[in-house]
Length: 166
Ligand SMILES: Cc1cc2nc3c(=O)[nH]c(=O)nc-3n(C[C@H](O)[C@H](O)[C@H](O)COP(=O)(O)O)c2cc1C
Image 1 (cartoon, rainbow, N blue to C red):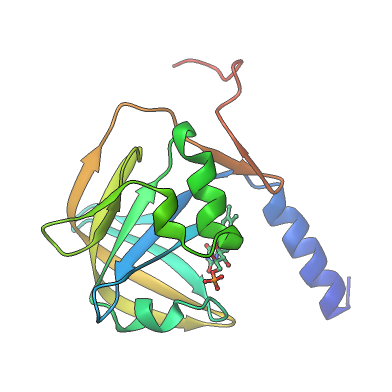
Image 2 (image 1 turned 30 degrees about the vertical axis):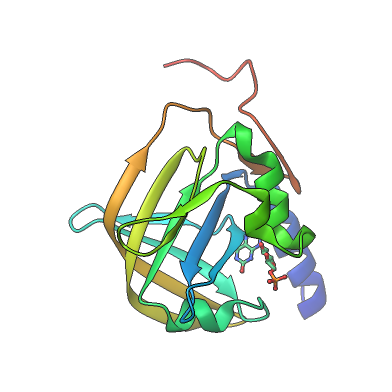
């Protein structure tokens, strides 16, 4: 395989066949307005200290807000949040009017009904091609007893019923 476009297409196909969870990452801008987007590039990095990462496309309209903000919140989504997942992927003009949310003690917009929430202090930003990688140290976290929402082949859904039990 030689062509750059061909390689990029196969790259996208392989990533489309790589199942992930799905998250919404939020932050608060300088005038106290929430910003957020659907993200599946989220990953765990370190346990001691607790560090996570995600990457943001440089074309995203809220890029500057995330780059300037000192903190961000990652919400791992539950099966109750399918509509929120699409709303925060560019389908709605006013994303936050589609979800229940409140401002946390850390000043971050927190979305209700999430599976897990990590509130993070940005510790590093890495320029990486057409994306910026944001690394955050977890300063607060919350967990709910819910089922995870998965992303695969450009669609979202619950864990298959025949998924093996431990
Ligand atoms: C399942 C899923 C995962 C996504 N993951 C990312 C991601 O990791 N990083 C990113 O920048 N955009 C990701 N996006 C796209 C953004 O959600 C989308 O470009 C963004 O909401 C556009 O915001 P804007 O209209 O304000 O520019 C993902 C979209 C979906 C549906």
